[in-house]
Amino acid sequence: GENVEQHPSTLSVQEGDSAVIKCTYSDSASNYFPWYKQELGKGPQLIIDIRSNVGEKKDQRIAVTLNKTAKHFSLHITETQPEDSAVYFCAASSGGYQKVTFGTGTKLQVIP
Amino acid sequence: GAVVSQHPSRVICKSGTSVKIECRSLDFQATTMFWYRQFPKKSLMLMATSNEGSKATYEQGVEKDKFLINHASLTLSTLTVTSAHPEDSSFYICSAHPGGSTNEKLFFGSGTQLSVL
Image (cartoon, rainbow over all chains, first blue to last red; front, side, top):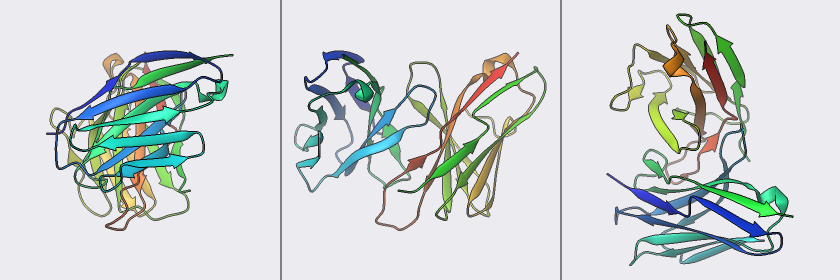
């Protein structure tokens, strides 16, 4: 089955700096890669996703890059703000919504 | 975006009692819903897939008689933790899929923190 590794497990950045979270996956058939933000005591919220036919996608301060050859993808948050503080999960899927495997999570702390 | 409502957000119960958690898709129909369990500082662990009108599919190691799932309508799935014990204490989350073979997006409920005394 799919295995998704995520690094780092914790990340502290100063407000205004950029944050990068990296994930690797094992199943070359994976073709959909969503990222979720989870605030304390709440469920995950989809923030951005990318399909395997695209190398990069951007939405305001958030961007995701995908390297299919190396089987890794990354989340980039620019101009970080305190409200970006949360746990971020990457995920990979080879079977649409039916087979989504989550990474281990990254706790991001943005220091004002 | 699609909204998934999960209730209750927090429940405390005595050991041996049963607890029901509801997951509703508010503005879309969901033929498939998923139930996860999350331990502190850990990732989401898929427990079961709930299909409207049919039996749920449970992941390996998840007791179906312990965690009863009912998906009686296109907008509601329930998870009942039967004869709860302290080791069942956890954060339970549901997600729902809006449908469409080309749509992979999942939308999550806000989670339920279960504490069994």
